[in-house]
Image (cartoon, rainbow, N blue to C red):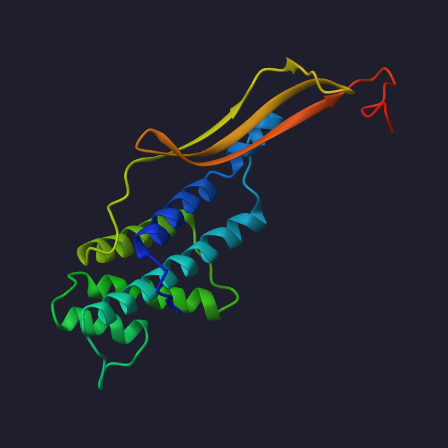
Length: 201
C-alpha cells in the first residue's frame, strides 16, 4: 500500500542500487577466497525476488501517479496493475504499455508458479522497461551509470588489546562514479600468544 511518505523516485533508486549489488554478489567471495563463484540457490532466488520487487514499485508508483493527477479507474479498468497499465496506455500517457504488460505477466508467473525462473539478463531487460515507463511519467530519474566494486585493505597492526592485525573489507555500488551503496566490515586477527583481549575481566 502506498503511504503519504512513500516516494517512487527514492524507492526506485534504492532498488537499482540493491539490484546491482545483488547481481555482483560473487565479487564479495573474492575478498576472502581470491576467486568467485555463483551459488545455485542464489541464482535461482535473487533475480525472481528482485523482479517481483521491481514490479511492486511499478504498481505502487502508477497508483500514486493516477491518484495525484486526478485519474479514477472505472469499468472496464480494474484497480490493479493490469488496469493501471491499460488505462495509461489507452489514454496515451505511457508509450510502452505492451512491454509493461509483458513484465506484469512475467511477474505473475514468478509469483504463482514454483518452477518459474528468471535470469539476470531477463531481469535487467525488464528493469529497463519499467524505468522507461516510470521516467516517462516523471516518477523516476534515469539511472546513472552504476559500477560495482569490492576492495580489501592491507593488513595493519591493531592497537586493540588481544588483536594483532586487522583489515577492512568493503563492497558496494558507485553511482556516476561516487559511492552510493556501501557494505563495510573489519576483520580482526587475534594474537596467538595467549594474551587476553580483555585483561581486566
